[in-house]
Length: 390
Image (tube, rainbow, N blue to C red; front, side, top):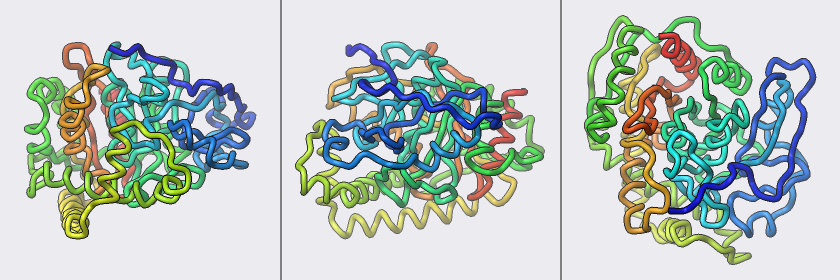
């Protein structure tokens, strides 16, 4: 089993004070090494990216927004290579500690950001979420994490992977801090009232391991008491596996398109699993791409139907708690595929999703996710606050 490493990128020493008197003046934050910080290379979890690309001269929008609100930046955090990972194990930089489940992965690709917050090294940290890269580490590390409505926030200064799915996201240990940081980045306070309707995704709970579904039941019961009306329904009538396959098709295709010029120009080094994903994206047949695009349309229509304004949908964030570190490659594929089946709705439909902590399986955290209508991020913040208050 591999040893855990620091959540911060080795060889960097960064501290940038936020604006004096800002609303987040008591907050320390870190930024995943996909966000530009002026005067410092953006490493992207790959030893050749920083060497082969220019040093940024401006902060990324999300970094600058937190600094302007008074928060202090304390470092850049480890990421899976060019954000192409879901477990948080980087062949070059190592695996950041999951303090909530030592010896187990923190989740990725925003692994270092989740680890830093979970260890109490900072109050919040910026991550990115394309196929689950904030939601998964939030679940595995017992944190609040958000994937905002796709397209709501500018991604200026954030290294893209698959633009039709990419979002900025962030973590916190408690709901109050989570809401404060979210209000700054979203430009909107939590909604005045909780949701009026709840939909419980029975297929998603059935897909999760039985121990995970049982561990989340007390949180579901608490959620039901907060809304006047609830019902059970299917999230994905075509099947969660079909949605997962669609996201596994579209995301590598876009990732290849994003990084193709760099790869063809500089022939950079990659871990095998990352290189394999890019090759699969490059070789994807047009018929498969067309099928996946139709499945995305199907997912978007389904979420519009399930989530009229004022409604939230509940499902397990991940199908199980954090797996052990250092699993062989042959065991990692099925684990990743199972995770993506529950996370695919984010990249396919683009709805806001918040992962809430509060359950454990054999001592390891698992998160409960709430999904809202597009643009109703503030409603999910209200629900996070209400759930913590009981």
